[in-house]
Image (tube, rainbow, N blue to C red; front, side, top):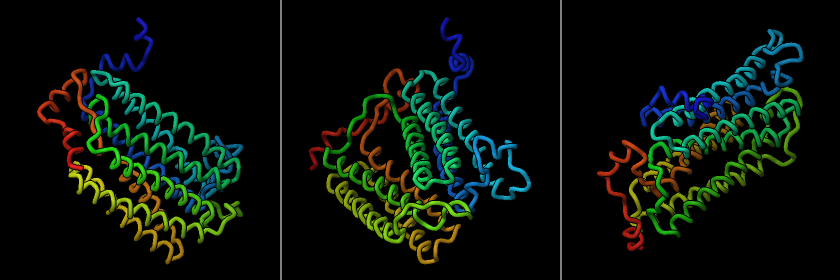
Length: 332
């Protein structure tokens, strides 16, 4: 039989994880994606970007850092090793999703998408080292990590809902406003990446090329987009109130507002205290939380019902009637 040659199918024959286990495995991938962003930031902020001056080995003669390389070599090499940890976590999510009966292909596809993003970013990270921390490649390295976080979050979301076609819970103009919010947040993160590429924390104590713009001017543009995102968040909350939108969606908007306020405070503190390393690292962590909170808003504006083939989850959800989008539309 063809399946006997498939290791994942063989595992599925002998292991049937619960729906909760699959959900937790997907959540672990989200957490690991955040860890990768934060530890990557730590490499840059501790000037360890070239702690291992070559790739894929640490030096031309050694796979691992040597004592002469000091703490910077250890930090850079440790960050490289986290790629394997990330692969293991993503691999567990893939295996759990594949072994779950009934098998949901949408979940395994999200898992494999994460795997290939991790592999691609690992190669890009090596190119970053070989090019002496080219700021454009460093920025791309971060943005690809944000893409990993996006896919991981989508997989986690899908583990908590059915495999049926998405049903909108609000009318189209409300959904469009939510996607404008996502677009503005995307621009905010990209501009923040340019600030990083032009700013003083280059990733190494030696001279490293920077993006040739005034980082203070780009910071002002970054702040302008912060206000745009906050304004869109507040506007979306009022709109959801006006159309009697889903309570979950309104809660997600409130959560986003709180995260934005906290991130704004951190941003101002780091600017007026001349970019201390710890505060900048905290700001990177906050950027992950902002992006997660932003993505959860449009995801709360639709639902995916359970189908009979989804198994026990379908029976558990049957007692909870789905909100009729026609009722929501009638309130506009």
